[in-house]
Length: 141
Image (cartoon, rainbow, N blue to C red):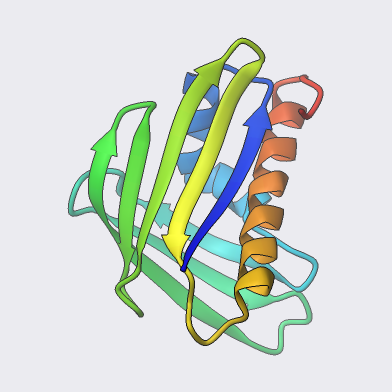
């Protein structure tokens, strides 16, 4: 089953792209009520690695996330394959008159209820949109 998460951000595509990929920005937006990313490195090129350390807010648990980039089109598209389960994630960036749309598409994890997984990914993407809007003085879409 495919899951799609999407957000509209009132900022230019180059600003959105940079914030999505900059490790310092990732630390600010890749979070939820239950967990947050405490370390990020990003080698944004085909064959490069995205590496994150994600921990529970209470500090009682955590895990390392790693993915290898398989396709990159500057300011348009990023694809990566998660190293732990080999799932392919596709992130598309497109401009419209009001800013930039970011759309993530991926196969559901069979171990997680799909509605729960979609809500988690959508929540993080919404955090990202709020982060970019706040950083650049725009109102969230």
